[in-house]
Image 1 (cartoon, rainbow, N blue to C red):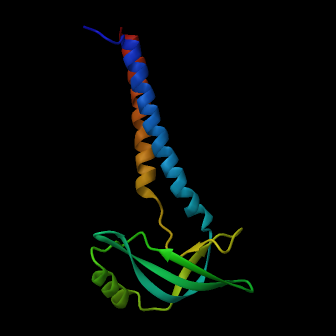
Image 2: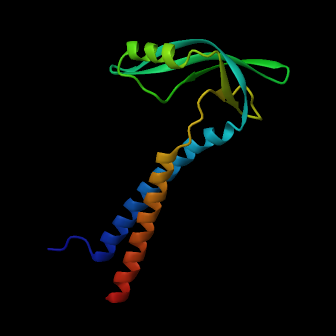
Amino acid sequence: MNFLPIKGVWGAFFLLSSAVTLWFCVQASLQLIPYWRLSEETHGYIDNFLVQEITQEKYAVRAFYHYQVGDQTYKGETTFKAPIFLNPAAAKQHIEKYWNEKEWDVWYSLKTPSYASLQKLFPFKAIFNAVLSVGVLFYFVWLRSYVAKMS
């Protein structure tokens, strides 16, 4: 028993694939925009670190710092996306062992110098997912035209 005609199945599949591709492309764009905004670099000085609970078994380090752009001094804060720790003791140990220097590189926006971060991560995974989903979408479009030619 055939509930949907073949064209309807291909249409539904194409819409679903298009929606997934759109989702991944939007996610990649939303992660690329902050990366591109942080176009300039200067030196900043750490005021202090805090350990912040994300979930019950995930902890991140939050840094408070100040930096200067031209004659203006700015204060900023960054919650590091990586590394993530399983408990606060591990985060504190990491801070003491690896992050004991006071001077750090600060990336900031040229147009809005108050927009800054100590961490500038390129969204490899999001871009990979977007490119992969576009490739899968084009493959299914090609497959549809190939099957139509063979019929």
